[in-house]
Image 1 (cartoon, each protein chain N blue to C red):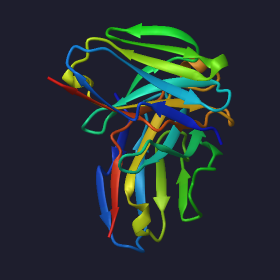
Image 2 (tube, chains in turn blue, green):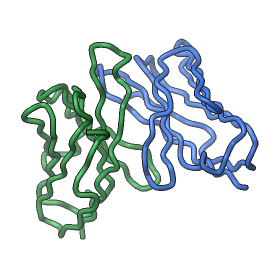
Image 3 (cartoon, each protein chain N blue to C red):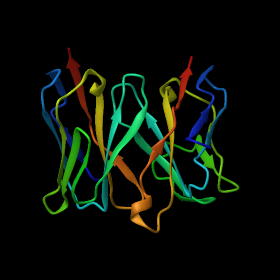
Length: 109
Length: 117
């Protein structure tokens, strides 16, 4: 099956800093989403981004499907950004969604 | 409803017992997914439905696991003869549709934390 690797696995940021999270996938995909799992375990959909670039406030995402990667940018990080960020891809079967390994982010004040 | 609802929130059971986990998707959402998440790992695909039809159950670990969505709305994930290795967070997600890719955005419920003693 498709492999979805995220980097870095762990990241510690000072509040106010910027960061880039990366998602690499091993095969062509039909679609890609980014999720934030907060410290309480809630999984929140951040972006639905099959290609191109989208922005939502301090967050933006870019997917280059032909090169099999996606990037999530966090600017001016806040403590509430802490948690685990997952990318998830549609591959193989039309709607089977495979999650990546995750990036655990800690933003310290 | 306003969001994906799962019940119970926590379930503690003894090894060998059967459990049924319920998912109530967002009203009008055609597609429903089940995932399992172990501590420190990403969600692992189990199965999904479009309307009442189970489209893919390749992620179900073995024949003790089954799922149904008889009326195309509420779904139940059943685990028979539970084992300790079944302990995990079980998550349900729904999406508006599947024919139009813009409707494939997934919305997750809070999950059911299953502990098998």
